[in-house]
Amino acid sequence: DKGGHLATVDLNGRTLTSHLFQAGREHQRQQGQLLSHYHYDEQGRLAQHEHAHGLRRYTYDKSGNLTRRLDTRQGQHDYHYDPLDRLTRADHSQAPTERFAHDPAGNLLMQDRPGPGIVVGNRLLLQGDRHYDYDAFGNLIRERRGRAQQWVTEYRYDCQHRLTGVTQPDGSQASYRYDPFGRRISKTVAGKTTEFFWQGDKIIAEHTAGQHRSYLYEPDSFRPLALLEGFGPANTKAFHYQLDHLGTPQELTNAQGKIVWSAHYLAYGQIARLDVGIVDNPLRFQGQYFDRESGLHYNRHRYYNPDNGRYLTPDPVKLAGGLNGYLYVPNPTGWVDPLGLNSCPGKEKCEPVTEGQNPSTNTETNEGAPSAPTPATKKQYLYRGDSRHPNEIFKHGFKSRGKSTDLLLHSRDNTNPPSNFVPTSTSRDVGMTFATSFGLEDGFLYTLKKIPGRDVNKELGILSDYKIEKEIAIPDRIDRKDILGATPVNEDGTSANYSLINPYRK
Image (cartoon, rainbow, N blue to C red; front, side):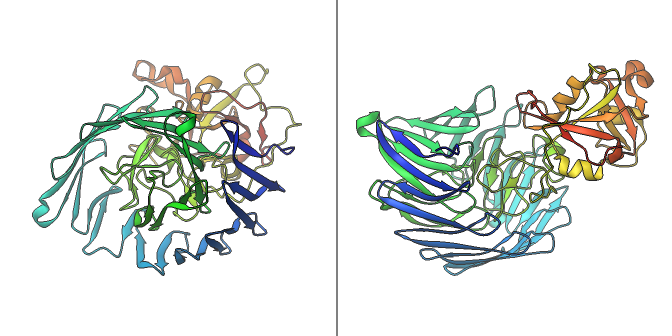
């Protein structure tokens, strides 16, 4: 439309969906013969979705947490949180109550499971009768359960820690293959191979012998819009996704508006009950694809287990994804993780942020101000790449991880032992590389005053393993007044044509 919002989607010369936006929010959507209406609260959050099959209402608390979802088809769901906004209980009118506990590191423990839950080093070792074993890299390699742990599921990985195979207790196996970008391009189960096709980080099609399916998404998001099934224009059938406030599929409807797939979910994404299964739908939380053979959700860079709300492997972006590498999201009623890297608020266009960022605040963009200084200027500056948003960094600055003042150990791994230095570089290009976690995510290049620090290459000499990083290690912390500004950096290494100026700089 004139505002740049989606108006219609056409398929083979016919209208597939039509959309009506007002004040930047979608208020009406026509999907085949089914017409949906959307209503929002004063903060722009989805408050009600209604169509011919029923109505869903959403209620939020003062912190923005979802407290109730009232569904005329699926009943009432009430959610309770601790002071840190972590989910502690989910009451379902049509399913048993779920209870959750969280340790100080944020590890999720299911309180409604029999037996204890044991976590060591953020690795879940025991939950009920399930025992978990890990390799030296922290990847889950074995799950033992049942009497005397006789039922064993084994997981295999390649050198890049990608899951390549699963063996079930009955001996059945599944294998997985990936492209050079780490995207899964096929899986083979019981001799049957499914091939996957991608557009960027989204699965747009899958193909097996005798079946082809395509997936359409809302613009610039991971929220599914439609499923196309069949070969060729004449034989393709369209099915439409009905989503909740997070973008999770609740129903699939056909061109006549009839429900052909519907399910009840538990809080962390596991299907509690399949109500209608005329058409298969493998899409779950944003960016997740359900593997029936394992019960896992493939989540682009990792695999997620909805049974315990954890990833099988540590976060590949390490601390950029938060202190707990196995954590899915801060809470599953308001956050999503489409890439398996960073959680973000479950709004229409999910922009990954780091744990602890307040999604309700925004740093002002001053496009009329000069860009942050570059090497072309006469003054000298330091640079630091970081995935954390300027909302946080401009306010608090950068702080070191610990108390170790051993510069050699810091240069090799500043997390073990936790270092008392904050890494920076005299090279803008190095800062750009670290901003994207080596091409894995969007981030920010922070430009700093040339404050006193220790020249790693100069002091360590031949013992400096990463001379190319041109590191200046700043003791203890970098005060917010010494941060001049930040430039957004895209995953592909390109930078935005504007900078965010730090209002606290001096």
